[in-house]
Length: 162
Ligand SMILES: [Zn+2]
Figure 1 (cartoon, rainbow, N blue to C red):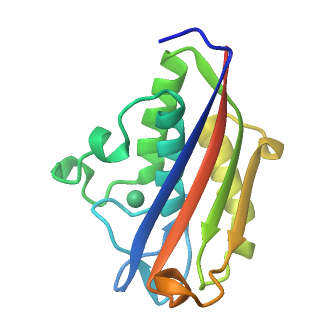
Figure 2 (spheres, rainbow, N blue to C red):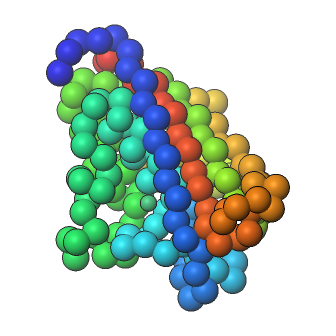
């Protein structure tokens, strides 16, 4: 590991929406007729954040770190995985400066859940609320996300040497 003062990382994720699954985004359970399909709880936002942190450190991605072939991660709480990755960030001597994210979903409306997501992420990542941004976008009814068959998330993070 180099001793760079700052490091930037980007993360992206997408999960299919299916009937009969819980919809968990940013560690918050959102009431909806469908939920995200995945081996873990399929928290698309938290997965994008995890990949941004791993990317900043140039480490292998979430799928390598928490393989979906490992039963240990079946229905895993992604916030717990995020805690583990944040521990890696700290162990490398870094803290998070700020985090900016996008949730791209045609439905349901994310707006009312964003303050709760920020609280969960602030607690998990030892950040103040003014250093966490969560923006919600739709896909203007275009493509799989716009047709309501999937939800996407993007994250970008800046790490600072402690
Ligand atoms: Zn994922």
